[in-house]
Amino acid sequence: MKRTFVAIPISEEVMELIKSIRKEFNRLEKFVRFVRPESVHITLKFIGDTNEYDFEGIVSNIKKSVASIVPFKVTINGTGVFPDTRRPRIFWLGIIEGLENLRNISLSLNRELAKMGFEEEKREFRGHVTIGRVKRPLLNEEIKSFINFKYEPISFFAKKVIFYESVLKPDGARYIPISVIDI
Image (tube, rainbow, N blue to C red; front, side, top):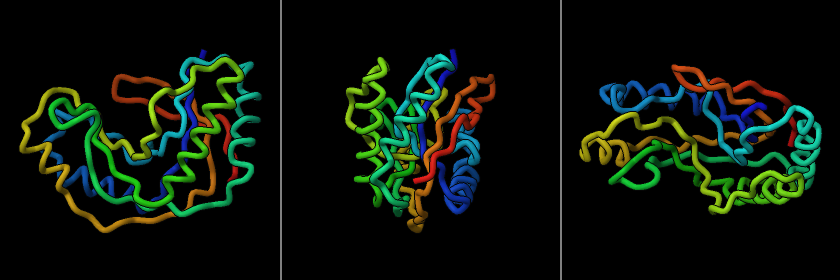
């Protein structure tokens, strides 16, 4: 069994933004495990434990889910935390353009993969870019400082969807592309 998910890769510009945010908030490194910029992506569907014999069907369903979509613009802006500021677990960058396409692909993937027996996501799709995971509680001022951090919006075109394997390591997950599907 392999842990898998489907995502859209981000641009080099967004990776550079993440590097600068890490630098700006390096004082939080003992509280937040920041994701390596090259590992950052926009998750469309977390699948979970997957048998390799299902890979072909999953790739077929990804292709079906993006068949009517053309490359589209995604704009990143804003910061936030999940689930809330009292108990943050995830630090994220917001998506202000391209959400409808991302949501439609996610919903289609959910439907198609449910037909294969994979669990359907019950929560509403909330497009974001995870850049950090909280390791231990931090001060409310630090959370507010991150949430209020301003940067210029960055846009890129989503041109592909990637089916990934997630390999968990002590220093964070490594994501290995299984299949790349053009939009």
